[in-house]
Image 1: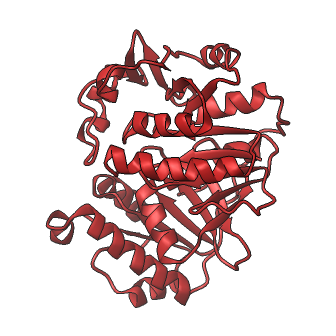
Image 2: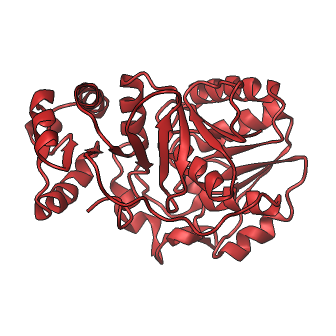
Image 3: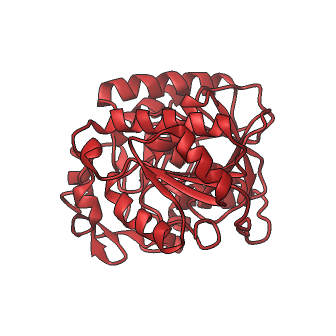
Length: 351
């Protein structure tokens, strides 16, 4: 068993999808269940928004449980632009597992996310010049990696990464004393280096069947709702009645629901809105038969899944990079498409 410890649900789902593309069965869990038959278990600790000390305690407890299952190796997933208490969590896992070297590679060259001369770039733009500068919880106001991590880095290596070849070179230096920490490209490179089988290129499941897209980001809402309206897709923003959403789903193939950007959004705490959205979505899911449930953003995905009482998700399809296609274990439920909020939906998944 390979174990991934992720700080949010979309990251856990993303790496489960990567494992599936390498020919490995994979599962996402919100509470570690060692009795699974999955070859890769991605555990969501839901710690990105926690204070560093609390996140470290929770991650350390997860790492101890994981270590008791005698995994072949452990990977610590972090946000690709280093949001959250990255170092506190990495050090907690390293201490539990007895690793004295942490190799941190958050860069994702496959998505244009690179590190050059210690500075982070997205598609050639400095990180602080992108939309991440206005992230509501972790604004990226600098592109300097050391400043993003907010402390010196003894015992931690964060190399410049401009290409997949750069990652492969670093992977070759991983030994039994090293804890690999990073994003999806790094995880895929470690899988490949350890000679895990890799099947043919993935294909996206064809669009079709009753679909509900859940958008939990006020910042994304304007663009997402405009896309929906251009395609003739009904849209609902909080506050809304589940019955109205259910009626729209029965009359249409696809419906969008989100927090919106009206007074209800502007005057409420983000966590409260996410909880309200999750409860509404859970009510809709239990009242109608959906083929697909599209969730964007780790916090939104985690809240919806918690509201539905799902704790184990099995990777079902090898969709494109950044997307986890899951289904709750041992339950009749819609196919879940989960992605980080900062990634676009691939063609063929969302209109």
